[in-house]
Image (cartoon, rainbow over all chains, first blue to last red; front, side, top):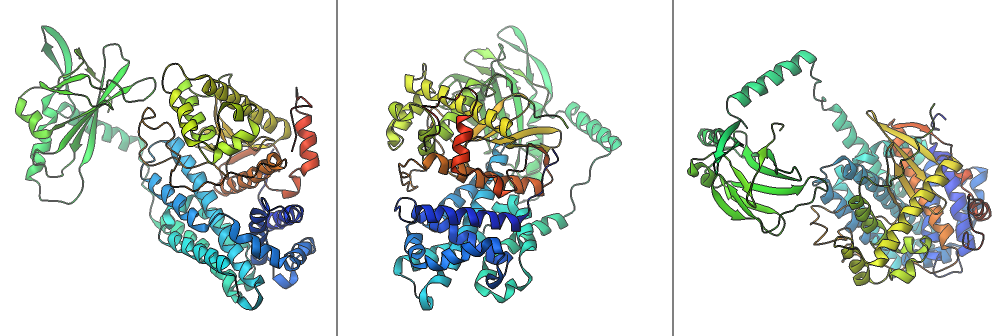
Length: 368
Length: 227
């Protein structure tokens, strides 16, 4: 069937009713009451963002009645839920993980994590906001005050790391659009959508940046021709060579001179890009990847060249402790199947980039 | 519109993938506590409150051969994914999401397992509320088979109560509804099996949920739906 559109107001009404039922069923159960109190207070707050509290839809009247009737029990239960400070720790992990998300599966998982963490942050803030409303004369018990303080700190952390939550920007925008027009008059609740606004603005800034222009077919062909010319000029060129009386293929040492030419370039601050060269074992079970600095960044010869070995079937690093010879320089792979050389070492051997691992010559792949 | 593609017989791209997902979900706290509720025999194989025991089982998956509890948990995990997919298809609790030409299907099972599959394989299954994010720069599994377990995270074992199994479903349904809404707004949802993720009234209450669990093809009245 055609996918149904979510209606955030209807959903807020529905969830509030569900969480009211849950609370009424579990309020006397110390194991469940805290999370049910949290859910109900947050759901009530979400409702009040969409509808004036004094004029909630009839379907929500029971929610409001239960919240006011059970105010003391809800306030006692709320601080026993997981502390919002724990949210910050998980959000930190998300923030760091984005920098290492190299494959599509991980990106999509982090997107889902961003959606759920943003929702949790919002529910923490809504629960804290509505709890303050229920406390007599604004007074709150010490534990509740500490809980609310942590919710505020979590919001503060979010404000400094908005970009980590961009996958939920459209949902935040839709939430803002569904808010009642008079929400601005309710300062505390208005504050809970500040983060939605920040996300919306961050997404708009991204949208305002012109996307990279799509290449026409003729542009692609011209670019490919340029790349091919560069290859024939020496970049990643593969050449025949003799090893122990056998003719094998190796990367030409002419891959190195561009790095040294770059040394004449004006000093820059950019980190060198990496050029990854791939080679395969004779049985095609292991791929060795040779990572060299590339581009026009200045080089002084001390740049590290990495060689990693991966099992082709599983992608895991392999061949720990095996002997490697690169352009005649002998080393041992570490216990993760990795080894390092320096650019100067490779240049000084005067040899092409033979890769011999555990006595077997590896064949270069022509693809990048 | 076409129906969602049935998955191929195998559940993951490779045995290695299956082992990694078992570690990342079934053996990683706090999600391990949720799996202990729905996987038959979990508690007899490993104590989800014992980090060292979980780690030992996980470690054995990357040695040869894996220990018996690891093999049994893997079989139970794969069975639960097949069950979640069957529930999702039977009840219309799925949607198809496209990014470019690539389609994935997202579904929810009655046990609260959020399952994701594509035209070839079931890709993963997890509890969306308790799953933990992939870490930055994880070491090889042979060094750390449970890279998502943050030792600094304070974990409170959830209450052991009869209502927990239904509670897991309800929590997952809430989370998956959020994921659906975000995907819909990104215009990535291509088709859906029903409106359970937008109409909260469609969420089965306890009685209806129990009934549906009992109505599963091949369900055993003695073993299922005991909230």
